[in-house]
Length: 113
Image 1 (spheres, rainbow, N blue to C red):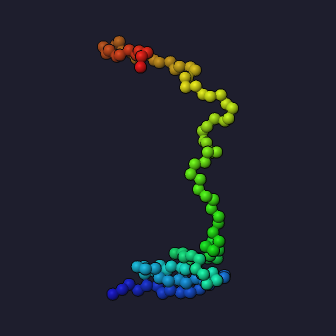
Image 2 (image 1 turned 90 degrees about the vertical axis):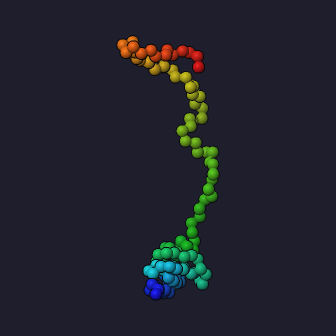
Image 3 (image 1 turned 180 degrees about the vertical axis):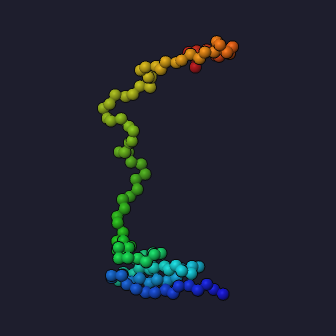
């Protein structure tokens, strides 16, 4: 026994001819094949309107993808600004831990690294 499917149909939208055929393995969905002047220009899964048919016939021009665009540099300083230094101008004050009350010996910081 097979599942009953929706029958296909044929209609026109403006100058475009559309043929609706059942999708394989589907009981209710149709595939809409769009023709312009007898030439197939595309297929949709929903009922196409005039704007959809025009989009299929003349899709918009898409600019080529640029892998790395060197003119876009976010977070960079402007040209002519002085270079940054890694040393901070004002060293932050360090609070000494009260380790003399807890009988703990902590290693003292040294300058060698």
